[in-house]
Length: 112
Length: 111
Image (tube, rainbow over all chains, first blue to last red; front, side):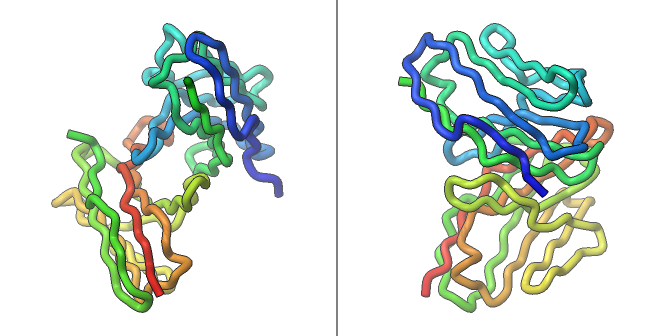
């Protein structure tokens, strides 16, 4: 069974540029999560989707971050404009209801 | 204060050693508890869930003390392949699977 797929794996951009990350969850998983992991820290939740509905976006910096999950499958996380402090690994995870969360390999973002 | 706090690392141990990781959590409403493992530049993967009665999986033993809000992970007979970062994770009650991660403790097992 295929795991959570993310792309790109690496992205280097200059500050103030936009960037987008894509996630394809495990087939059949209704719940999708976006996390951000800073160096030396554990992942922190940005947003959680149940199907196509964002049910917890309290930690998403809404001035520059946006996310969507059209049709309740794939999801895109966007940052516009990016700041130096956004450099981190962005992890997507999926689960079936509140079962085990499975993480994708992440997108490593470097903002110069 | 962070909601989940772990022993600062790194832990450097020889092969065959026994090593213990400690973790405390501040939210008494936390419902479920886990240890995740994260290899360098890889994603976190579930190592084991932690139950009040304590649970064991081969060389790994996890324990939970709800009264003290304390979680532990014991690794016996360490292998080189155990080298990784171990993340203590709690799931808040009634928040639909929201995981709160500790900062992780790095383990390096040397020959």
